Image 1 (cartoon, rainbow, N blue to C red):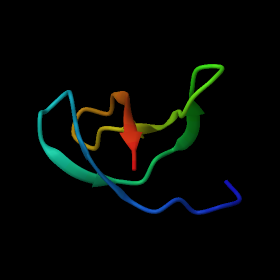
Image 2 (image 1 turned 45 degrees about the horizontal axis):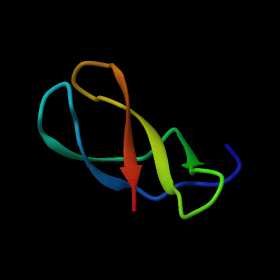
Image 3 (image 1 turned 120 degrees about the vertical axis):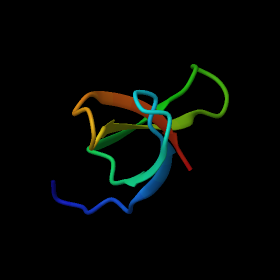
Image 4 (image 1 turned 180 degrees about the horizontal axis):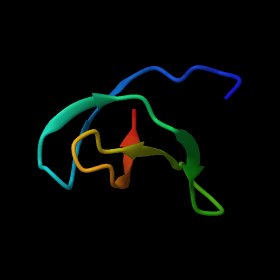
Length: 56
């Protein structure tokens, strides 16, 4: 990746714990009109499963 993304505090759905992770990829999810939200792809450090979460 060309740009480093800052670490984000997210809740890991596989373990239920709050962890600070750096997103692998970030994109905007929005309807045709209106404000969208930023979604990030993360990898659980304990289970190795991938999950998506909202990025502030």
